Length: 294
Image (cartoon, rainbow, N blue to C red):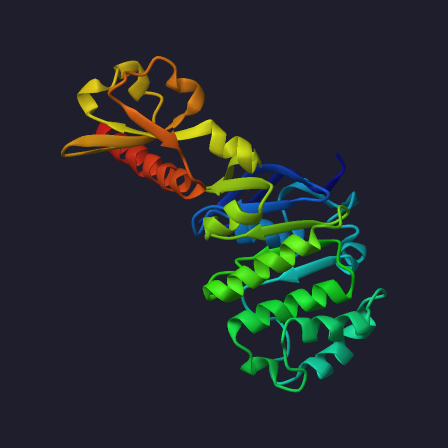
């Protein structure tokens, strides 16, 4: 499979945060959900892909081109949707179309106005007066009008009502029917990832915790619960985000570690949301134990 996006050994350090050796790739024709709690490094990674943040080391290629050397050629073929509008809010859709047209060789005015109509957006109202959902759809309309082959969305569904979220996901699902395209969208709303993503990359504390297919992720992890006294010591060491309470415990476990567990313990497939919660708990638990060990 040909990759539309490849990240190899990406490192970027700030005073209080660092991306450490980020590696993942997105094959053509697929949607990747990019998840992790706030502050895990999703926006920094996206800024690096867009060459808006200078990387310390590593290599990013988009459409097989270098993200730094070929940044202009890449941006011609890339659509970006941020969670806030990056356009002049005092202008209407027609005025913005006039402004954007010269920047893209492949700009299609007919496509733009068709999309504006299809998305129920007024073409004569200031875009600053659009609702959040309308602004999202407007940015997607722009990406589609210059024939973007990869759309990158940073938290596009946060703050949207369920109907607007649903519409945006439908638009992305339709967009990806062309197998030469790709979508990378970062979100903390994991239900959206479960609904439309083929691949998932989980960032945690500036590192990749998982990257691969969504199905493999949910098949590889389960939530286990029961009475703590029924838990063999050897198994306890393999648990992630162990949480004991008055009448039992729960934790995340790899499905390959389930062999031979006592019948008194229950387990079920983990959702992406649960996986993120247990990763965060594991972190706290480890910090707590280290603190006590000192």
